[in-house]
Length: 83
Image (tube, rainbow, N blue to C red; front, side, top):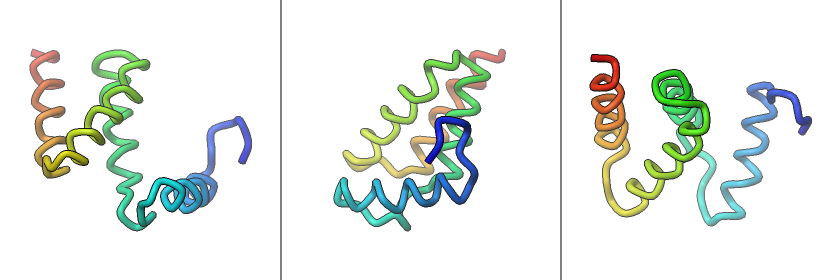
C-alpha cells in the first residue's frame, strides 16, 4: 500500500488484512459507512475529528449500540452544528 490516498481495492485489501488481526471478519467492516462518517465529521466539525469520531462510534458499537443508531446520533449532532 502506498502513502497516497488508497484506491478502493487497496483499502479493501487493507481491511481484509487488518480485520482478522483484530479478531474480526472483514465482511463485518462497513467501510463505506465509516468513510461517510469521517467525511461528514471532517467537513462538519474538523478534520482531526474524523478518526476520533470513527473510534468513538466503534467503541459504542463494540459495547452494544446498534451501528445505525450510533450513526443517527452522530448525524443529529452534526445537524445541530449546522443550525
